[in-house]
Length: 204
Image (cartoon, rainbow, N blue to C red; front, side):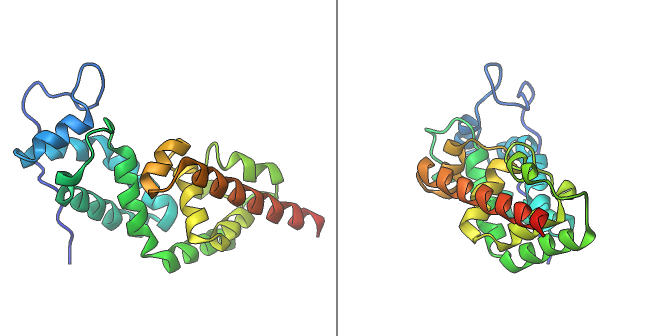
């Protein structure tokens, strides 16, 4: 059954598509959307592409559209509970997307295994470190893809929020509902495991 997107109506004249000094913050838009639901389309416009890229990086393009639509539908339904102390909504949205993706853990593991079978460049242990700075699923070394498949659900979620979604540790902590120190520990553990996997491959 197709998933319904949040109300597609455009924001009123004079609204700005991006948050910042000259435009309304996400928190302000969400607050107003409680009484004017059509305004939530501005949040959709601001973050749809980012959430879609994140979902595609974790589950592949085939599943990304449904995950993205479900994320914004859930966000729209939960907008009354949004914490206005957070001016930007991206950590909140990535948290919703991550929870939805976690329901497809087996599909995610299959996706990374498929990436590994596709094969890429020669193994490079440094690639596991660079993965935290700039990671795109289509560019993963096959052994890194295999390593991601072997990570625990929690470690993989923390790493991909930092690497795929480019969230700070503080933002990832909001998304996951854990302290920033826990995010740092999970990311460091994931990096270590990926690096070890590539080093072991080179020693063979």
